[in-house]
Image 1: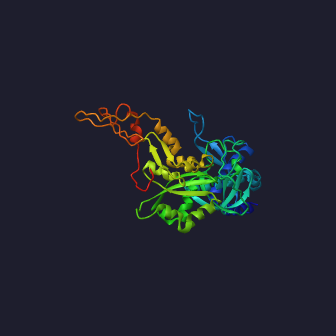
Image 2: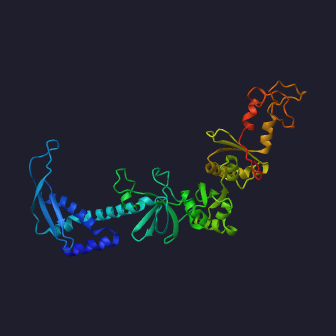
Image 3: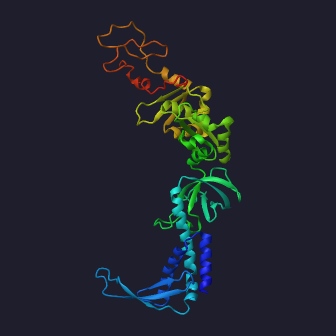
Length: 419
């Protein structure tokens, strides 16, 4: 029976990719606890197992010397062979559950060691099973991953990593990225049903999935010549990707889109039809915001000069307002997440009404300026410059000094931009 048990253990090790000596060591520990209870050994037992024959040897621990004065426990023991005649039968009876637990934990530990450093990597798997709460994806033989899509109203502590509208069929191949690998030795509270769920957690909604897909399809992105600077995503519906190039001669948007859109079309196909907008990244916030609102055309972008104040006002033509905002505010929301700015969009009609309400000094004969003084730089809607003398240390007179923030905002110097 011993040899049969060892053959079964070795077969199990090969199937689960577990080290043979590791499994034997764990089994010896569990058997030592079992025999100590069965044989009523006060100070416990030590068990050794012959890896060739499977024969089990049990040694009774006998304390030597005096106990530790602080803990009251013995630190040194002699051993006495108390191996019973039916060790193999007892081992088979008492170790079945332990072996299952050891195999399960050993497999999870090996998976954790292999994949814990691969968080953020893209994987290609095959759907094995789909339930209402999660989908099991086979990465390779013996390694499975979980793609959770729990109902957040019923299980607020669980994840939902499935894009809106996606459903998976058996044997369907899909790409996803690894977002978590559960540590079997962690002291954290386990998730619901963790022991029966795979250790690897993957996602189809994470923004980095788009970046990994572009790395697969665009050699320039994989080589680092074209850099994906920012991604904003409504999974399953629409995404915006901002890219820049380290080579001034290379168009990063064209490289990602590909000839006749072939490259971005492959990414869209993998995302099950999710719309992907590729825009040009700029270090100039005004340019960046104008590009992020594509395909809407922008007349002007007013950015607060204070770098700590991430607010911007965007003026668009009247017929572009709904396009700039998007359905249910999606375009503006994605642009804000892409750029990191709070964006307030106004049409030209509303912007002109606001400007007309600003107080303007009536035209008078130009006064004689004092030595070292200069004229107020404010220009009214009619194109006439204010004739007042500017206040000391300011570019404006007292009336128009409040307009300084609007005239001092960052304005793009790119002649091709409508900013």
